[in-house]
Length: 203
Image 1 (cartoon, rainbow, N blue to C red):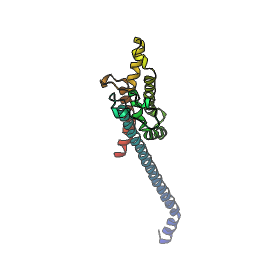
Image 2 (image 1 turned 180 degrees about the vertical axis):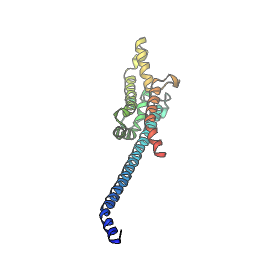
Image 3 (image 1 turned 60 degrees about the vertical axis):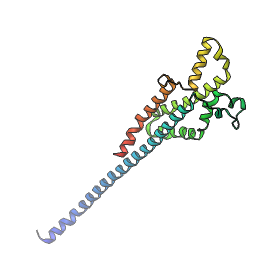
Image 4 (image 1 turned 90 degrees about the vertical axis):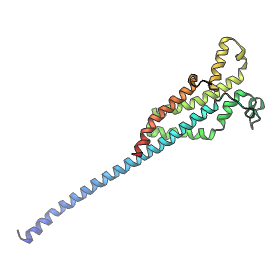
């Protein structure tokens, strides 16, 4: 084969080589894009998981602290915007403590939408139950303050009042506190959802 023939062959196959190189380059580029997309999504999942889990730890601590049965004298002092007879009522303490965290509660409620978008609507059920606990404390405080006579009433009335009390205030025996158990269960559920996403980014 002389040089002219070799040249003709090279010219003939050159487009095939060029096309092959282009396809190979496109394949590499596509794989690179998929890797970048996967890493970006993984990072986003981890960020949302970290933020949500931190919020859950915080609300659990806030709820437990607000339900302390020990009410100091200064907690029953005058409060701006609150009638004196309410502020001075020891049963109002849990709600007063919770109201100090309204800004956080707003962030907590907003975070559930990002969490649902990434992890699914079922994943936010523990977050919704933690918020429900906050509302149950509010309701129990209202009932305690407006039905004090039940504490001295019939056995059935005293039972109802006691249920309200141990919703607003936690039991000194942690293992007997139903609300604490619910809080812990919800925290664990969120941990089980978030930990794999957080740890995946670390690998």
